[in-house]
Structures are given as C-alpha cells and as structure tokens.
Image (tube, rainbow, N blue to C red; front, side):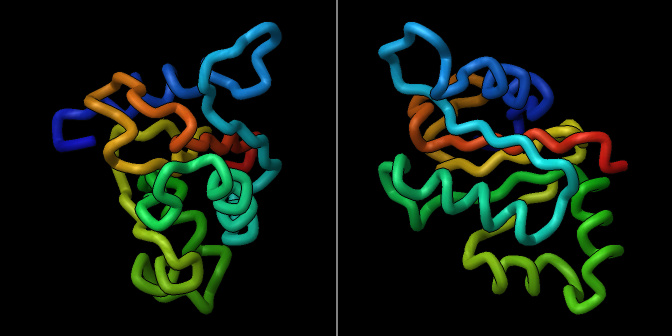
Amino acid sequence: MDESTDFEELASRVRTQSEDAAGSDTDRVTIRSFQELSPDALSELLEAAEPNAADPGSLVFVLSRANADLLFEREHDLGGIDDLETELGREIRVEGSMPDDTILLLDPDAVDGEELLEPESIACGIVGSDH
C-alpha cells in the first residue's frame, strides 16, 4: 500500500473476496456489514480481523475523508485522528479516493497496489446508508 494505490479499485477487489464464499478453499477477506459508522463498528471489525491476520499488531484502518469527518461529528469526545488511534490502538489512514461505503482494515504488506497478497490479513467493513 503506497501513494499510487487506487483505493476505489482496492476496495472493489476486497469486497469480492469474502471468506464465506461458497465452495472456496482459498484464503479470503473477512467482511462485515454495519448499519452505521462508529468507533464500536471499527472495534468490531478489528475483533473479527485479528485472529486471521499474520501480524495483528500491524493492522491499519483506511477510511474515506467523509467517514472520518462523520466519526468526529458524532463522537464529540474524539478530537481527531490521534484520539481515534488511541481508542482503537491502531493507525488510521484517511484516503481521498476511498469509497464512503467501505472501511478497510489491513496489514499494509497484505496488498501491492490493488493486488491482494495476503487476503487473510485484510478485513472490510461495508457501511449501510449512513450518510
């Protein structure tokens, strides 16, 4: 994952790699759906991802600017990214090209550009019509 990563394309690829895909014996991404975006939803995604990740301590959240702003509007006790990182115990990256209906939690080494190298170290949160 670097500056050249197309997060819209990456999110699209991740969303098609569900660990629950019928008949699949390949490593798959953990996918969870959420009605609304909140620190609790992010914590739930983290709990789902940690057991499958090769290095759980390296997991990073990737949010769209709109989702980051929404979190800070709702959670008045969060002063910014630093507060959210402290609460979750994970780095937060805000990416302008990230789709608003998707949250990624991944090991930065699990992707190369838009290619999924280690799907088991990637989790995806699908956010409902929360905007």
